[in-house]
Each structure stands twice: as structure tokens, then as C-alpha cells.
Length: 157
Image 1 (spheres, rainbow, N blue to C red):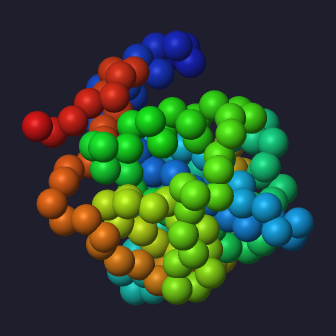
Image 2 (image 1 turned 30 degrees about the vertical axis):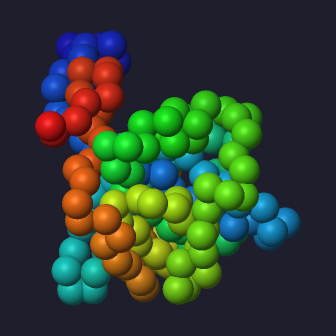
């Protein structure tokens, strides 16, 4: 039987990009977190998925808003990833810009997507959000991504 610790060890050998997923709550505040459980799902319609821990303090804001932004971080944004990975860290408004569809996104990211939530599914200790992409663009095609591999941040170069 595979333990949760062994599962983490095995999955740590799958390098992932790092994103910050954000939403704007009904209170007008921006909520966000570092997510590496993000992937494309479909080209027709264009869909992505993100996974949120059920213990996430802002989970209800993501559910209620029905929209979210995904900012793909560059290899110069490890510090941003760390800020959004820590609970209750200060996240000044200067980190964000509003995308064309009005979602808060991270300035100077490699690329972004803005999504409407089309479904949310239980997935063990996480919620799986399926999002229809309504806006997206590449902002920086000169740098590479920050990666996560074997429990550490990595770079391609």
C-alpha cells in the first residue's frame, strides 16, 4: 500500500510549473494562492483545471465568485510563489493587474488565463475546479518558468 508520504515522494519527481490562482471576493478583496495542481483539459471547449485544498481559508470566495485567474510565474518570480504559498502573508495591491475579463492577475507573469468556473468536484482532500477559459495571453516570451521538483524550486537554465 502506498502511504501519503510515499505518494508525495513519488509525485515530487514530476516537475510542475508554478501558478498563482486568484479571484476577487464579494467583499472586493483579492484572494490568491500558489498552485502547481493546474493543467489543460480540453481544446473544444477550452478548459483547464485547478485543485484547491479543502482547508483553504479562501475556498468559499473561489466558489462564490465563479471566476478565477491563473498567472504562470517566471523564473524571476519565486518570491511571489513563496508569498502566495504562506497563509496570511502580506499581498500588496501593487502585485496585481486586472485582466481583460476583470480578474486579478500577477504583474510580470509569463502568461495568464481568466476562467469561469463551470464545475467543481470533490477530490479527496481537495476540490477540483474546472474552468472555461475566457481570456488569456503571453506577457513574457523571453524568460523561462519557475519549476517545482523534488520539493525545491528549479529553473530550466
